[in-house]
Image: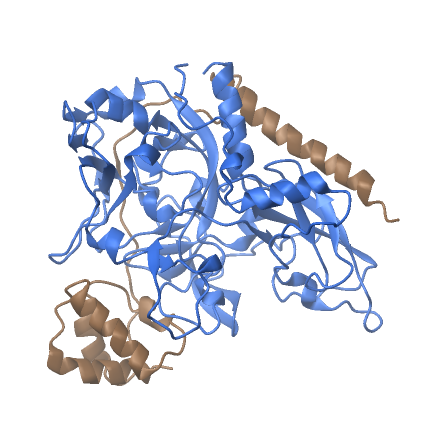
Length: 418
Length: 119
């Protein structure tokens, strides 16, 4: 890649990178031997889940469901590095029939529909195309569902239905351009090798043509420098940076360009969220407007102290964690030992970066510290006009909410050949 | 003041190292310059999933196994929070209507009852 691509990748990384620090502090406890269960601290207290090491190409994973696999990344993994290793990257499939074998010589990626020249691309052909590469967070739309109160049915994820990887592949736009998109085209639909067991719509998702052609959406054949694990979508996976993982179609083998909206189940019925601010609605209500889920929101987690942990008192407790900007970067993370009410302290973390700061401890009693520090604290600070000198930071916070200005000059650019 | 500013600077610098490393490696792929870029061919792969041994032990296990396990593991059910019969009925209806699960209508009341009794 040339220098421009370096800048592009760097900007993308800033916008989407999971951030993590590298120094000792609280320290996650190493897993001893091979426990067969693990304890998650969820909204109504502790719940046990199987911890399995026998899923192919995976180390220890929390088994939310064995078939079709829902495998969660243990939180301790996020404390170890800025990239989530492939062998502990979470897994989520919808159908009982998922690809267990892919012959790379026989595999084809079909591009069809409203195109001038339908394509049937081999993997070798894709590997020879100009590449792009960037870091991006992949997060399940249902991540952290088990923290809802009241609890709701669905995959009972803790916080580990997410991961950050360096993705490498070809730009979706380049492939669409190769096929020649017809003038009437407006939507692009994506499907993979997984199949439903009944006669229902296969799992297919779609993006608007403009989004699909933004030069950033990627057909990835590698994550973290290796081919994708089978359970993460080998051999090809769509990467839609800043958007929830439901769009990151795994084992991608067909792309269809449509002239009108995608009316299938997975766009019109499933993965819809309330259009209300922050998608908040009264529990139990059903009659509210919805829209397909799209961009992720800023979030952060403490990783160096396990949730619910009890620690010996120290006047200051070093804390380490990860933060993501959703569809933007992270400029700053504020942390607090009392839910942000008082004693709030900010630490500046570089864009797309770690954060680590000691938190002042207020000894309630003597000798022991309160365990409240172990809870995920709060996610981000809204702009507060007339506050302190950190005007720039506050402005960037506003950007985290999805202001167009957080994508300066990127849309419409072509990835350069290397 | 606490020693934060000093620490913060140090860690911010470390963050920059992360970014620069990623950036330079992206700019110049090559075995010596970048351990992360993908160089190899894609290798034909096959996997086998571990056995799914979880089963229901509660009364009515037969009914649940017959109607639920064709499509998903028992753990999908056992890991749900406590849900009301109404919530379970909605779930079963969704399985029938949205996913065309072959569940007989006359079995739905018992299935819902068994599910609601699990926790």
